[in-house]
Picture 1 (cartoon, rainbow, N blue to C red):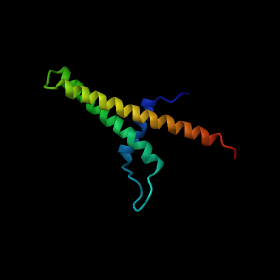
Picture 2: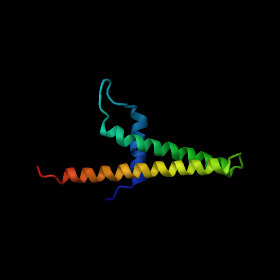
Picture 3: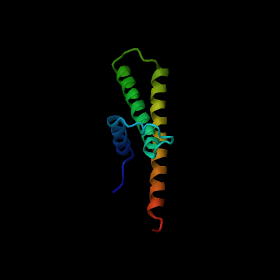
Picture 4: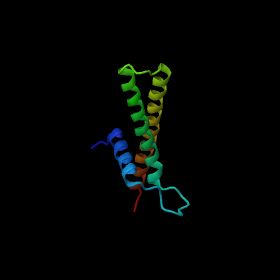
Length: 101
């Protein structure tokens, strides 16, 4: 069964927003989950901002073309960043699982 990147991003971001985990106090290193979670949260936030901009544009509120383009570009770049992190994570996990015991 293939994993959809959008569903995975939503799942990770939901976990990030509901858990509130920012790492353990006093920990000097960043966890793998934090590294994967950050792009997912950024992608969802950018997407939400772009959605709001689209709604404002459609409802004839004052949204400049520049604001509209900036919001859409930010959302696209955040999604591309998450896809890169996701695909690298999947490749790494596959390599780890293929290692001999």
